[in-house]
Image (cartoon, rainbow, N blue to C red; front, top):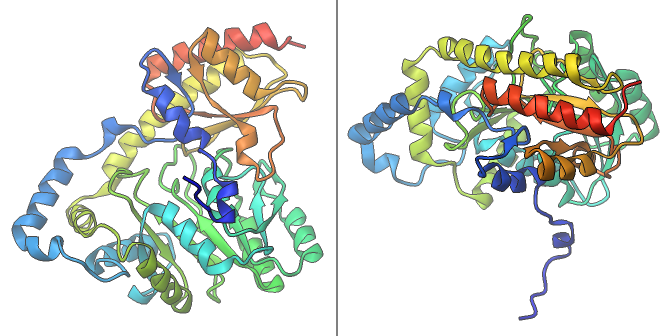
Length: 397
């Protein structure tokens, strides 16, 4: 059958990470590839109880169509969470999305015309790159260093490209690098966006996954002119299967997003929204976040310790204070995709080659490792096997 697909389907390809999940189902493989939260920490019994309460109380409305903005009590809970982070607003400033991934797609649909220029960190979250690319933008990549997005490089780009539509950033434990944007840079980012007439998309699903140091205010905290759209998610701190995310921004922008949400899926799963609202109403999240962060920190320390002790000295890596990932750079002449193939074949350990995190590819000597889904013993086993392989392939200077 001859199907005349839309031209945008020429850009469609399988996500490397989504495909790697198929490999991870093989129990003989140690996967440092996926960014999934650890299912052992999902509050299954508590959510079951909350879901039962919702259905016992008002099952007809819980199973019915509802407003596109989202279940009001859930939005109130999310507004309280944002207020605790220093960002205040009302119900007209927040829309519930089917995960923050839908938020990225709705924001792209709202803002990008074909040929528009948008700024992304280099490297950046591949899910955002994939969401944006279907609308035909030109990506402008801004450098990063240990303090996050380089503001001098951003200003250089904005001066050279004054029509930039928006700047996309993951300021807290960035995916894929694990880096955190320094406090002065957060304020400067908003100032530059204001100066050059660009919006900011602040994607922050890892904000609460912090091991050390004090939390920083979101970029949105410095926004006095509805310049920043904040994207949040319950996927990493509660569970991803319920698909609860949100966007917070100016009332005018949120109103337009509601129109797009109506065309996309009418509203986010109503039963899931009410269940999460009930859970947040009766649960103090701080206790389980401490437990979750302690577990992730232990695995991260095992991973970074083995890299320091056993990997070739020419390998560079980040040591995150939170989040789910660390970033590794090999000497320029080495190709992470070839190492991935060799690692899968010889030692059954997988990771994500770094070129997938750049909109135009390249940077073949980089890779991402995730410590969120593999327990401590398996982390040590997999990293020691990787160390043996890397030392075999990459000479120690």
